[in-house]
Length: 440
Image (tube, rainbow, N blue to C red; front, side, top):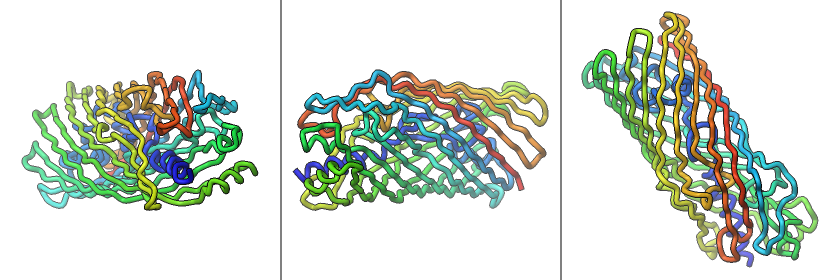
């Protein structure tokens, strides 16, 4: 009994560290706010825009379109709003888990980024980008109806990407970059200690886990100026594997809960969980239709099908691995956009996009990732202060489709101690971005 309960608690907490709901912009737990310019164009210029050094986060060959030296800094503020409607939750024995807490789980987040490049020679550019490509945060009330599935989830990733670009010809560049990725997670969920004293849902404990690790990968890209007006871009980012080394802490606010923890021998411990940030590819086109109007389009693929399960290994050699089946699908995102030069100093931006969810069905949708298909609508503007300094502001609204959740518990499956949970998630988000680029 002791090992079974320990295994479940660590599995729910530690393994779920990879499941941060990135409801603001991209599907799964992907974050793409590395540039205010790309956000303002709904990512339609990600692969082929190559307007400043920040674009190297999407396509490293963007460096070949920027002469001389440049740096860019940016920040995005993300305000995600999602709520579980018509929620129902119960134990395997049928006890009601509803204590009346809020069903809201959206959190706000600030995502900074930095990029710099130098032109080392006529053909070679060197660049360095630091940004966060995955993660956000979700937080529910500790007494909310789905507390045994999730309370708090926070994942932060930081990528450090040194890049080398080679200008094959005046029109064609190829580039490669190495990626060192740091991942840090803090997550928690409730434990139904009342079930051990024939009072399911009445006495809660809490499991909180922290874990971190470094992983390594690469990014490749090419940029081709087909004509003076038309540019094509293609990039590929590799999957990066992290092994989160975590510690789990148990607690309870009630004397009965503390007594149950002691009786069950629930002690603070540890374990590891594998997390892979998936491969991603972009292909795009940028066309200067007139001296004032530019059109662009981008297609993005993300290899979420590598996310088949969450497997947890325990420090206790006598405890078997525990896993949660995910079975996510690869997903696609499509976007189009336009820029209009209002004056020599002001450039107006807009775009729309559609992003598919990797979650295959309600059975695999969780409170940590209430992911669904979404549509982006964006606008923004760049003010060119002088020939060296530019400032860009962008805004995106995310219209998320409703997503049903149907987590079923049986006496033998992974939800047996978390219980049944069903309902419909309503999702929306607003993103504000500001960036500055400077040539020197």
